[in-house]
Image 1 (cartoon, rainbow, N blue to C red):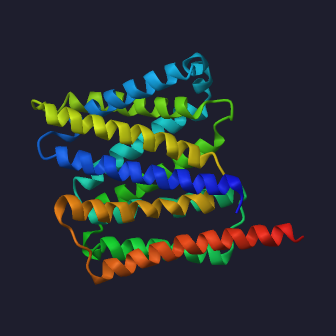
Image 2 (tube, one colour):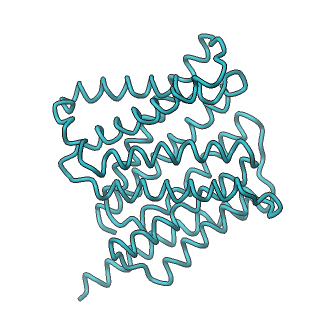
Length: 292
C-alpha cells in the first residue's frame, strides 16, 4: 500500500473516532439545551481553538489563500450538509439517518471515478457495498420509515461527499488548518443565525465543559478529515468512514447501556471484513503495478 493511502486511512479513522466522541458529548448535553444553541456555542469554542492554533503555527498570515474559490465552496457545502442532516434527524429515527448518511463513500467513489478518473475494480466495488450492507445490519432501518425526510438525509450524504471531493481540489498551498477554520466559521455563523429563532436556555458549568470537550473533538475531526481527503485515492480512503460505527457501539454501551443484537454483530463483522478486504485489494494492486 502506498504511504499516502496508508496515511489517508489512518487520518480518516482518527477523524471518525473524534466525530463519534463529539456526537456522544453533544447527545449527552442535548437533553438540556436546544440544537442551534449547542451548535453555536460549540462552534464558537471550536473556532477560537483553531484560531489560536493557526496563530501559534504562524498560518494566519496565509489567510488570503482561503479566498480560493474551492475553499469557500467547501465551507458552504459542509454547513449545508450539517444542517440538512440535522433537519432530517429531527423527523426520522437516528438509526435510519445514520444508515443513509453513511452512503456518502459510495457517492464519493462515484465522484472520484467520473471526475478524477480513478479506477475502481469490481472487487473494490463489491467490498464497498459489503461495508454499506454491514452498516444497514448494524442500524437496522425499517423500510416504512423512508419518507421525504429520508430523501433529505440522502441529499445530505451527497453534500458530505461533495465537500470531501472539493477538499481534493483545494490547491496544495492552502494550509489544511485554514481549510478547517473556514468550515468552523461558516457553521458557527449559520448556527448563530438559526439560534436567533430558538429560545436560549441557561447553561451550567458542566454543559460548558462538555461542549468544550466536544469542540476539541470536532476541531481534531475536521482537521484529520481534511488531511485524509488530500491524501491517496478517495475510493480507498472514503470507505473507512465505517470505522466510526465500531466506536459508536462501544460508547453507546458505556454511556447508555446499548447492546447490539445478533444482526448488529453480523453487520460489525461485515464492516471489519470490508475494511480488511480493501486494504488487501490495495496491497495486491500495488504489488501488481510494481511487477510491471
